[in-house]
Structure formats: structure tokens, C-alpha cells
Image 1 (cartoon, chains in turn purple, brown, green, orange):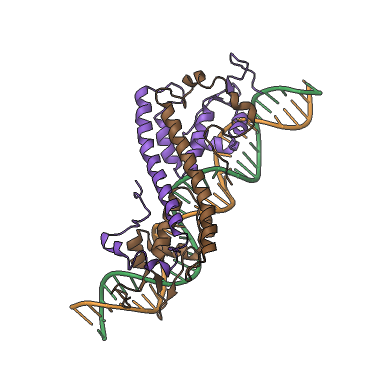
Image 2 (cartoon, helix red, strand yellow):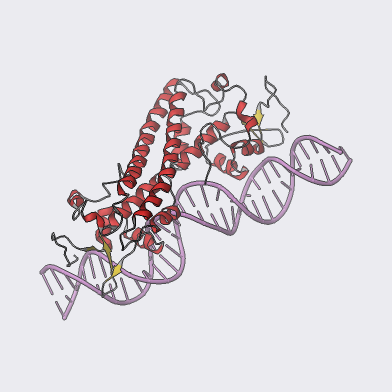
Length: 157
Length: 157
DNA sequence: TCTTGACCTGAAGTTTACTTGAGGTCTTAG
DNA sequence: CTAAGACCTCAAGTAAACTTCAGGTCAAGA
């Protein structure tokens, strides 16, 4: 166990193992994230990692963003706007948040469309061959160019 | 170009190239999806693929689902409930749709949480080290066990 | 007929996101 | 002080989702 403690008696920094256990990700994954610049740490005299408490929130953020389909590269780009050891400025936050909001809103819109499409399809069978000629006879959308247009809200950035 | 036409003068079936162009995915990807059982085709006398029109909707569905972080395996499992050449029964649809709705709703909830967290963070800097001690002093959540709890709505199924 | 572009298969290569393994060091409870 | 368990690095392995390549076939216009 880590000996240094903060004002409330909790450790001021966390070892990899502690971060792994509390964040639910493997130690190897934390190493990996560090090589990718997603998180960072200080080292003890014996070369062991010590993480600031804030790393837990960063890891949460990473995992949730990944789960909704955002790549580590994109996540890294976003997090790079936030210095890991210094409080970010208000402008940093605003910029990051605005960019992500757009991205997240778009993904939510896509999800909603996917879900609603599915709802529409109950009792219609429109992913199958036969039924949907009634609904979308002979592919009117074909003239509008390439790419899925019904479901896809916006194509890859 | 494909010669057979349907009632409205549009081709009754599509070649890989046509599907690729209209769906916006590469020919090699369509081949790949076919090996994975995500889509299927008939063959001409000369061994070329001919797709039913419905494949476009299937491909759209696949891409959108992927974009929001769902694996091809999961997508395949969902689509396998829908016969590619036969209209699915109403029960098939209800079952599929119910299962997906839950999944999609969960992902939307996660996205929303991620977005709202980001909103909260403007002017706080809670992914950084210093500021958020004000908001979450010394990690009260630590006692509740492992795993990100603030952002993660539900862990991997 | 010929030739050019679309298509075929199977194998190998690529990227992303990790995990596993080998060989060695640190730390801490007893 | 010492042994077990946590940690270290670097290299190699793995799985998913494709793409690229090689070597050949098919189809449609001039």
C-alpha cells in the first residue's frame, strides 16, 4: 500500500494496481493508455507509477467514450486539450466541450434513428426482401448519389 | 450493367459494384460481410454475386450500428433473426426489436451521461487534478467497489 | 473479336486495442 | 531479513474488421 496520505487520510496518489481495481481496467491497459498519452503518472524513487486521483475520472471518460464507438485516437486528441497536471483554463474546457457535444449529439441522433427504424419495422419486416416494396417502392433514393441515406445521419468525419 | 429489370424499370438485383457504390462501402467489405453471414447473395451463371435490393437497408443498418460501437458479431446475431430471403414473422421482429431497443437505450443513456458530464465540467475542470476536490472530495465513491461509477451506466454485457 | 473494366477466390497484410510472457526489481508483512 | 506479491520493461501474441495482392474469369462496347 501507498504510504503518503492526503488531508482526509486517503492516499494522495494511487499505484497502478489501485487505479486498476477502482477503475475496473487491467494494469496492462493502464500501461497501454500511458504509452498512448491518454493518462500520465509520476514515478517513485523505485520507478513505480503514482497516479493523481484525477486519473480515475479520465479513465471513466475513456471507457465510456470508447463504448459509444469513439476511437482512442479521438479520445486522446480531446484529452490532450486538458493538461493532466494543471487545471485547464476555462477556454480549454469550452472548446473541448463544444467539439464533443457536436460529436456526441450526432451519435445520439444516429442511435435514435437506428432505434426508431427498428420500431418502425415491427410488423413490416423492412430489412427483408419482400415486404418493404410497399414502403419504399423501387428505391427512390438511388438517384441522390452514393451512401446510405436513410439511417446514416452524417458520414465519418 | 445488370440487365434484368423489375416492374418499374429498375434492376431486380444488384451487383457487388452497384451495392458498393450505393451503400458507400467497399466491394471487399461486402465480400467480407458475406463471409461473416451478415448479408447474402445469389450467383449468376458466371458466378457473380447478385444482391436483393433489401441488402442496401441491411448494409445501412450494419454501418450505423457499428458506428455506435456495436460489434459485427452482435449485429450478425441480430440480423440472423431476420431471414435474408424470406419475410420474417411478426414474432421475430418483436423479439429482435425489443432486444435492440434495450441495448440502444442503454447506449443512448451512456452518451447522454458523457455529454452531460462534459457540460458540467465547463468552468470546473473536473478531469484535471486540482479543481474537482471541491466537487468530489477524496473520492467518496471508492468504498462502493471497483469500476467507474460516475459515468458508466452499465458494464459490458 | 478483342480488350477493358468489373468480378472471382484465397492468402497475406494492416490497424486498433489490448493481453501475455519472460526476466528482473520493489515493497512490505511477518 | 526474507519471501510473497506488486511492479517494471520490452517483445510478441491475439482478435476484430478490414484492405491489398496475385492470379485468373466474365461481360459488354467498339
